[in-house]
Amino acid sequence: MSTHHHGDQPESIDPATNPREFWEEFYGGGKRPWSGKPNAILVDEASGVDASGRSALDLGCGSGADAIWLAQQGWAVTAVDIAGAALAVGREHAREAGVPDGAIDWRRCDLSTDFPAGSWDLISVSYLHSKVALERTQILRKAVAAVKPGGSLVVVGHWAMPDWRSPDDPPLFPSADEVLADLGVGGSAEWTVVSTGEREVAMSDPDGNPSSRTDTVVHVRRA
Ligand SMILES: C[S@@+](CC[C@H](N)C(=O)[O-])C[C@H]1O[C@@H](n2cnc3c(N)ncnc32)[C@H](O)[C@@H]1O
Image 1 (cartoon, rainbow, N blue to C red):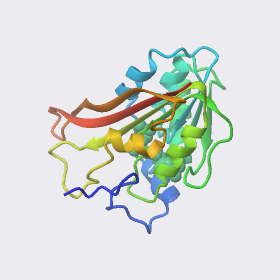
Image 2 (cartoon, helix red, strand yellow):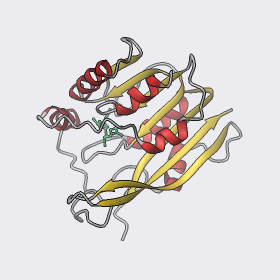
Image 3 (tube, rainbow, N blue to C red):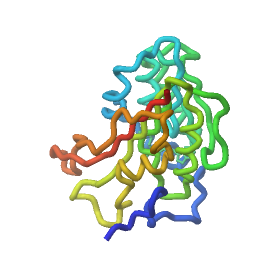
C-alpha cells in the first residue's frame, strides 16, 4: 500500500500551489518555526568531519538551526532556501547566537529551477520534503555533482511518520536505499557509503508525551 512515488515525493502533493508562496506563508505567517536544535542525525554524521577552513552547503535550510550549528563547528556555510522569510528567521537567530557576520551566507534560491554555483566540502540536505512541487531527485543529483573531492553529502529525510499522525498527512517517503539510488552513485569507485539506514528520532506526540518517528540517513563521501 505504498503511496510513495519513487524518488520524488508523496502523491498527496498539490501541484497547483506556488512553492515560493507556500513556504513564505509557512515561515512568515506569524508562526516563524524555530526549534533551535540542529537535526540530531546531521550532528551525528558531521561531528567527526574536520570543518576547519572548509565549506558547507545546507540545501533547504529552513529557519537555520543546522546552518548555525555548522558555523559553530567552524564550517564556512552557505544556507539556501526558497523562502526569504525562513532566511530572515535564521539570520536573526545567528546574530543572537553570536555567529560572526559573514560566517553564514544566507541565499534565497528555488532549487527546483536554480542551484548555487560552486562546490563544497560538505553538503547537507535535511528533510527536503514538500507538500507542493519540488524537484527533489534532480536537486539531489546536482548536490552530488557539487561535492568537492574528499567531501561528503549527508541526506536526512523522513521515512515513516509516527502512528498518531493522521493518514491525511504526507505519508511515506523514500527509504535509505531509495535515496541512495536517487543519488546515482551506486557502483561508482569514486564514492564511499559512510552510513545508510533508518534511525529512530525522539519527538513528542501532540499531547506532549514522548514518542518517536523513523527517519533515513544516507552519507556518502567522494574520493
Ligand atoms: C521540511 S522543511 C526542512 C527545513 C530544515 N532543513 C530542517 O531540517 O528543519 C523543507 C524546507 O525546504 C524548503 N524548500 C522547499 N522547496 C524548496 C525549493 N524549491 N528550493 C529551496 N528550498 C525549498 C522549504 O522552504 C523548507 O524550509
